[in-house]
Length: 76
Length: 526
Image (cartoon, rainbow over all chains, first blue to last red; front, top):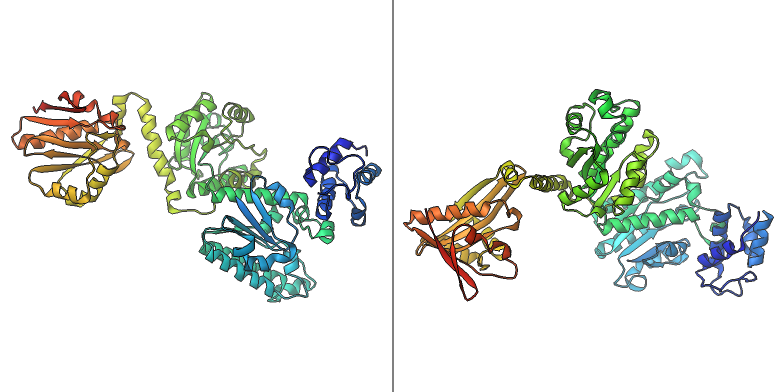
């Protein structure tokens, strides 16, 4: 599907409780302090709910960057 | 509100959904330790609510024992008993209902069915026993939304997150409602349309016999709906009608239709007319002396709903189901918990309707011509002179009455008692009743018969403006005349609050003079 980048970043910022500019198109879990393991699960749950996709359990640990998330959504 | 969530799953997503509250969530392993020690680390003295959310599937594990569940129950009970100021919200168990022993599970005293039922029953009994315990029926929510929609599997295994996004949202909504219930923030009035809301069809067109209300089909949908509304009323919500209808046929339908559950006496106010419903709701709020934010308005007609929503944004106006068969579920799931949540029902709640009826009817009558209104009240006054049994109430009246009080002289019970016993004084107690209710002893006059002077006269503000003070003075004059006096003297001592009494003496014929701020004077007794 075609995915709006701004939408995805807004979702991440909301779930991870981030301020403006704390996350960008190249951000990874390591760059963003609030993106911890629980935050990561919440991001994945929110992505499923927002985009109506089911993320296979084994892929959840791989989606540790904005590019990885975009790739998953666009491949769907 | 400071809320502590005690749980053995990951409940952190709840924090962001309960914005405005200070929410603290235990760790996955902390369920029992936290309850043991809630008084210390988790709950400082500012904690107002503790939410107990045990994970059913973990506690009903097939190879484990259910001892942990029993221990948890003991802890919840002990905590609730020793912390009566903390509201404890305990959840029923949500779990896969099938077990590896299939239909033999029900025969196993430690099986899934028996263990779960024991836990749920224990919570219910605790809630009966302790007013600070509220049950959040998680399994009931699973029946409402579907268990599969409320939970997720992958994130359970990845991070002990049991609930889905929807599950967390539903829980947060339910907790908000419970907070509203324990803070007594329920709305007070349910204002109802009639045609196609309380019954099927249009009364003015089909006639009383033609409306759909009965024990079959559509008629039963509306009858069952009325039963739920009556139950809400019995718990303390007051009901009113705002209908576009002819008042006579409405009265006829409410009193004569055999299947009508809600009768005229169940409503504090029945407003049937053809004018704008928003205006009438606003007028009704004034009659009942309630804010519009106390009102919920139910009407099947989207135009009426929209009018009230736009004109009176403080009134809650829920949507109305398209099909009558959905009425009961809609009412119980969406209307009652959202707008009328309560955590306890008291005897006073059950008497609400009568109280507001009397108030509303008096005000409605007052809006018409004053004299006609007074006549219509059918006021009955009783005077009791030097009645010892009334001494405590009379002393209380001298202490509490600020507005209609000529001298604002406060008297103790002993002082009133002395006046009652004195041959030189008469203490006149005034009782008031009208066709809306009995107000009891609401005024008194004290007269000094040794010199023909009115020591004081006062009247509760509840009955002001109904000419009661004039009748009370007539009684005082009668007593004075019996002792041979041809004139009565009186005085008025102004205070910051008794202006309402200031013109009284002059109006009833006293010739007053200002004596250093106090008005003194006398009038002849005819």
